[in-house]
Image (cartoon, rainbow over all chains, first blue to last red; front, side, top):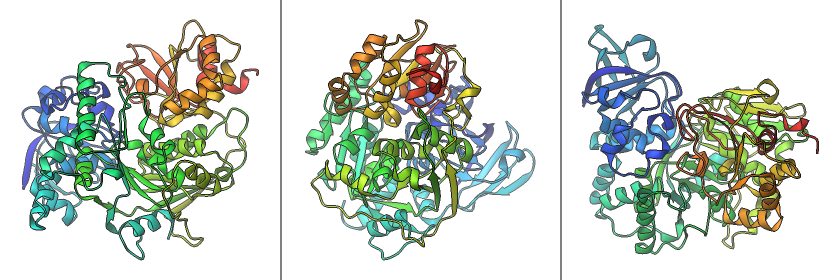
Length: 168
Length: 419
């Protein structure tokens, strides 16, 4: 499992109201959510992300509300994954559950510049900066989380479990 | 074990757990509202299971945009209503029967000490005020709970905050939690539980305790929690006839850290734009002009909050440059405010009374801000764009400071208003 993309950088405490403001939450259409992704910080984000990007951020990415529309908006805007110094816990779980890979990677913020081409090996947590020919180690996923990532999200993961137990 | 460890041990059928353990826990109650609920329902349908695991353990509340302010919002409400009907979920609070979900949860007896409660809303941590372990989850995870009744959770490290001293007049639990947020910062307690204790908490009303625990998530915490005492137990007993077993921290419990704080000389505090941890004493920002003053939300929309605000506006007029919005947190609060004639004081002062809803706090409807406007609010978040335009500014404060500022037309220390 590998994700690759150009770097887009954001700072500390990027909250879910910035990722997707409350006024857009009356839709279940992921594409519509994606159009407004990050609009509070960068109104051009959705068009920039469409080619497939990796977000690199500082501390506490995704703080604030429990809205799952936040990782959904990012995923459908074209974000392949998020690497941050740390994540707010609900955002972290939500992202994993909807199949948006997010990895904690200490010190990454100062080592990567906007536009750098990154490739991340999700199983081992290896991050390669192809533009600078450098590599870093992100925190590896615990096994239980890696299984969900591997299944593409919690719903598929749960269905597998329920089928195994004969409940579905 | 501390209270959080005991509840998670009980919920996962273990004798003992400690911080860092990952447990598969049985959920006592799960809550959704109309912002997170429709996505959860969609995900539940995708799983393919026909029936929820236990219809009596699900609470559904319409609160963020009620009554529906747009066709799209109405569609979300309809999805909720239809699901409640199909699954025969008895605890469904439609427009006119509930209010802000967290207030409804505690007020209608859905929260009991010793229970594990999850909710598809980040402020679910509020219920720790009654000695439950409660935390926010997302929609997909909620769907999984609907299907199975269980969830994996990491047992959090706990930071204990011991609070002593007496509040000055017009200084409130909101000022205390803003102080703590300013000190620990927005990521100061990520993944952790904050356990509030000490003589000040023992003396605090349930309403104040709810305010404290409500904002634990603004420090990144998984929950805020208080050991249930007679104050909490009598509040719960009045609202539920179901049995429960309160759990409390052992005297030799493990804590990652113990902080101490005294409130004797605490001033009213204010969180300045655009982060909740940008906290200053109100005296440092006095004089900042405001366009809107909002009293409401799951943080400070309860009857005690309305009483405090009404005391300050009584016999005065809201400044002509300011619109003051008062949004009771629930139908019960609304009724109480009517019976106590608080609504009359607000109306005479020139405030606008809104129906129970998240309303302006969530920035969905009922009091959005235009570019360049400033709002002082008793709510919990001042993020860019939270209450409308990304070019508006939000200051968070206690209901007393909001009311005093509404009268003054600019941010004002409530202690300076003569009563």
